[in-house]
Image 1: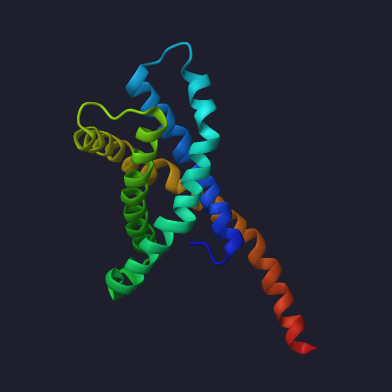
Image 2: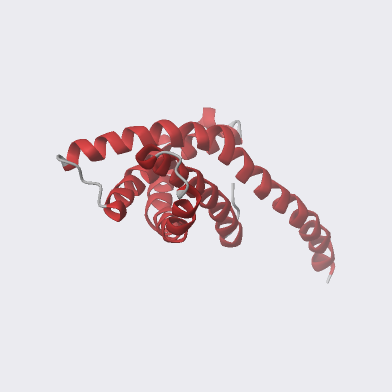
Length: 168
């Protein structure tokens, strides 16, 4: 888990960057198939989708999920292993992000169909079925590994400085 804002930004950049890239490709493939414009479509929509995802993650879903989790869900069983906390928060984040990003995708592509609610529900379900395993099996472990490597690299330097500062 990120320990400071800098680590939170790194973790969000990796997580959102990979999730948006794969989910954009997935949604374009569902809508249009794998045409000769596939890569161009993914890369064209990527920057705006990444910006919206980062804002949603850092400003809306992340704080809401963490507030709900630490106030109502966290228990002694989960505290025994950090991965339980990480996986529970990840699942909650996926549900929240799929909820907002599915709406974003519908608005950007103007894909409202005949019935807005049914189109949204269809989009939400298909995105959830892809995003949850993608997050839990692929992207989450990659993001946690990168964050762990950064934390491991910076922690020894911090530990070496602390004893010296106490002696002064």
